[in-house]
Amino acid sequence: MRKFNLFFKNLLEAIGVIGSFVTISWAVFQERLGESDINYPWLIVLTILLVSALYALITIWPKNKIKLKLTEKVEVDVFFGDLFSANEILVIPVNEFFDTIVDDKIISSKTLHGIFVRTYFGGNENDLKKQITNSLNGVVPIEVISGRSAGNKKRYPLGTVCQVKKEDKVFFLVALTKFNENERAEVKNCEYQGVFYELLSYIEQNSQGRRVSIPLIGSGHSGVSLSKQKLLEFLLFSIGLQDNLTLVGGVNIVLHSSIKNEIDLNSTDVFFKGIGN
Image 1 (cartoon, rainbow, N blue to C red):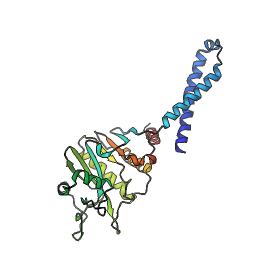
Image 2 (cartoon, rainbow, N blue to C red):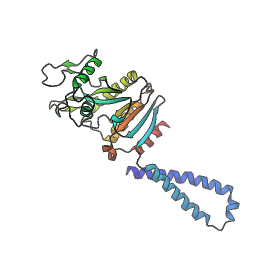
Image 3 (cartoon, rainbow, N blue to C red):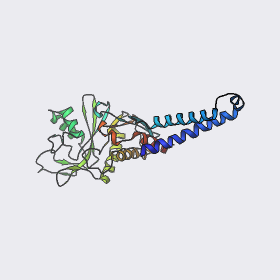
Image 4 (spheres, one colour):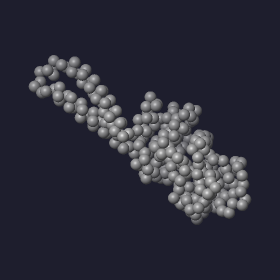
């Protein structure tokens, strides 16, 4: 229904623009056109409809990438791809303990957190843990749970960010989820907003002009009760509403190919460019 509405809207706009051009041309060249044996009125109407329909179809053809200028100081590329193939800085959502044990209990191997640990620090988790500890030096934890049977003992506020490196890649690990009474990592919608605000502030202060690639944070096992489309729109709104935010290198929002059927970049492109105008 959404794509049909967009198609119909673009069709009418195209008919209006092309029709106006033809009307003016007809008025200017009426005498010359009248000398022809061709039934111009029917030909013109048919041409307008065909060209307009073609334009409308092209504009609703599923896009894999869009570029948005959300503020005077921030440009965002949104596209489907592999987050880990990006260069520069990658954002990885983690839990409130910044755990490094991928055992499908503390960290699920299917989450970005788990994939990150295994891909870049598999077999050398101590190096990752050391970098996390050094980066969080000076950050006051909420509490230290000495009796925690496995994983790190210090629990940090959601939205806390630390920086780690592996060869030529830099990672910003952001505390997105906390453990509930059933030891399941989750984040509430109201907490999610604060996490993203803190993340943007950290990126502004620490990216040093480098481009930052962000996944669709909250779209995995975190429990955020928003559709993938609304999550994307929220991320874009959050960036666009911060007029003083300066991200010189720009931002990528990298969407996993598995959610293509849940994201409509065409309508996102039209909506946010409409706001900008």
